[in-house]
Each structure stands twice: as structure tokens, then as C-alpha cells.
Length: 282
Image 1 (cartoon, rainbow, N blue to C red):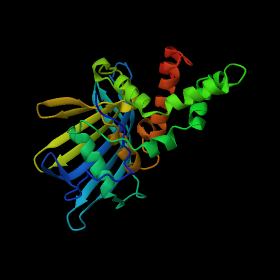
Image 2: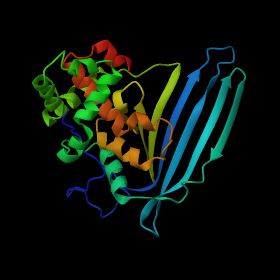
Image 3: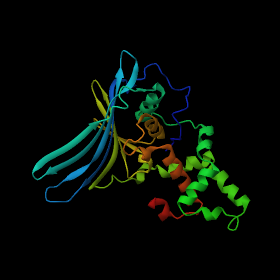
Image 4: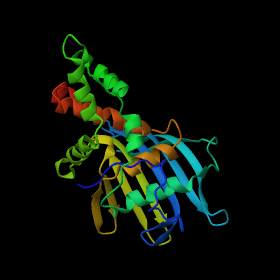
């Protein structure tokens, strides 16, 4: 995998803003982002129940921009024996008609296109996120902060580890190792925890799914027509983080904070400061 990290808050010269609602040479009408957590009950009625949230974004031809059309929260309970459905929904009006920045929509659509083989890294942003303070905080979470106390290691040894974690070389190794799509399973059958991104054009629907069983929901699984592929691109996550409402279901799983925690924890494991079991438990 050759995909590296980029952050959507930075403007890059390679982004073209000529037509922000174009995807795979088609005009985008609507984008639906749905997060769903559900469970199969294994009862006589074959019941499934859970929660879902859907953010619907539409493109305005008159204003030449994307805006939030609706934000819906639902609880549901479905049964097969006999067939029944109970759905309670609530429309959240707070975010209605809110415009979405062109830069974020370009980041999202470019990331989902699957055409990018190399993504630039903005060193300054990475350095601001992955700091000595952040490293110590993650180490404390995994009960490994004692490794950095002077009675267990020297100041020079600590600094060597801090510097290593903050290098782009370590980041590249992390991305290639952590998001190796050949090692992922499809998930479990009695529990659902997904984020779906549905891009709707005049002629097609493109669906991308982020599973909870995959770190940071990477790679995203593409489902449309005869194409079924995996897309490794953190630009998708960080664009979503800026687009989605603050308390949107499952938002934390694709956030920059979750990336920082996962990356630093992986580095600590690589340096044998935490165990493989502890890393995968959190």
C-alpha cells in the first residue's frame, strides 16, 4: 500500500475546484452518510434491533455548493417471525441548511475515488498531533507510562523513542502494516457496526462501507455494479470528521484523535513497551 496521510484542513495545489460535485465523471446529486449499530437477538422472532443516524447532503445548482438537507436519528426493531418493523425517527433541525465547505467535499470525493496512489504528507500538522505529550498520554492509557520514568530509562533513551515515533518514516511503516487489506476478515454476523457513504448520481449509486472490525474503518469497502474493492485513504476519515455533526454516531472511530491514539499505541508495541494483546484489547 502506498497511501500516506493527508489532512483536509490544508489546501493542496493538486485539488481542482472547477466542479466540486463531480465523481467518476458523473454529477453528484446527493450524499447520504449513515451510521448503524445493531444486534441480532437469537430469539424465536429472529429479532434485530439497534440505532442509526443518517446525514443527507445535497448539491444546490443555484448556490453552487453542498449543504445539509437533513439529519435523522432512529431506533429500530425488526422481526422475521412474524414479520414486523418498529422504527422511531427524529429529525435534528440544528444542522439543517448548513453549507459544507468545498474543500471538505473535494477531499471526501477524491478520497473515495480510489484513483490516488500517492498522498502528500503535511509534516507540520503531523508534528502538532504526534507530540511528546500525546505519546506520554497514550502510554499512560496502556499502563506503560512508567517506561519513561528516569528510574527505568535515561533521558536520552526516552528522547530516542519520542523522536522515532514523531518521524514520517515510522508513519509510513505504520500505514503499510496497520492497513494491510490482505489480513482483514469480513466481520461478525450477529452484530452490526458500520458507517456507509452513499454517493447518488443521476444514473448510479456508489456505496462505501467502513467496518468496526477494521482499524479506523480502513480500508473502506466499495460496492457498486460489478466493482467490489478496498480503498485505503485516511483523507476519507478526516473529511468526514469535519463534515459530520459533533455527536454523530460512531464519529469518534474515524477521528484524528483515534488515529493519533492508534498510531502511538502501535509504535509503543513496536518498541515492546506494550504487548500485542494489550494493543488489540483497546
